[in-house]
Length: 390
Image (cartoon, rainbow, N blue to C red; front, side):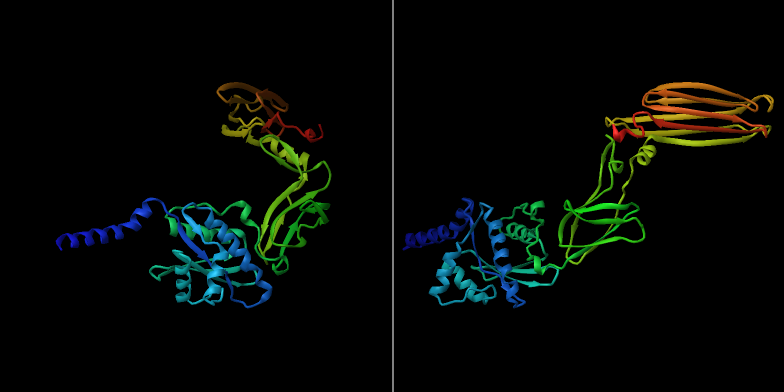
């Protein structure tokens, strides 16, 4: 009898250990997905049942730790038990169905169409314990369902998965049920051609206070403006020339404001090539001395950072009638250059010096009213106006 009790004790321990042994063998978690229920009751939104279920089943099936019960098996069991296949069946019925299917979990869900998007609610029922876990998500894209798939897989397997992706930004809503969005394009350019997804739709107004308005379907769109080959935008640092273009992702019912940055290429090139342009003014006879030190940086067309330090010290001569001088020091990268300039009273001095990929311009004016004016500027020489036509 003593040995009989020991035998039964070992048998009980073995039975209790079976689930643990199975888990150690990485047995997949089985799950049955019931069709989703349309809480709006509008037949025009019933198509979402199939879309949501299909995406979710694909997501769950992507894990080798989850086994999704075949839909035909679910149908067969429900028919045998004379049960209705629905996402809002009673939990007790769902548990009974899960046991007949041999599933560990039953997934049932519902959705509410909110005009611009969909609210999805899911209950994941543990067939063995009867406990349930709720997951919900609101949106209108395939990624909305993928986000739910990530949450459910995390719960079932304990591992994070990456299901949301750029390809999942497509809407799950039928086009006729998506509220259009609006794009307002402001532009200074007169009669430039406007393209949406490379399709011509109209001309810019030329009045920066009055936009060109477009009603578009939700989703990704490309807005482009074209005038002539002399107008557009410049890409830095390589200096390439393009039409102004903007990529947008328009939500249902959303309003987006865009500003067309198209300009004449020569205007843009002038702004890019001018690194510094300033003036110093001193009254003769005042004994004033002025000094400046200006750091300058830019990225050349090869992507290299060019560092410059410009230092200028201005002095009067012993007599204001003799004129004034400027001592200029320019450090270009790691090399230093020094220059001295003198302007006699009543005469102008202009000087230019090219160093590396820049040009230094100095203008020193000592006029008849005993006032000095020192103009100094730094320009890029790897950029020039008209280069877009070459």
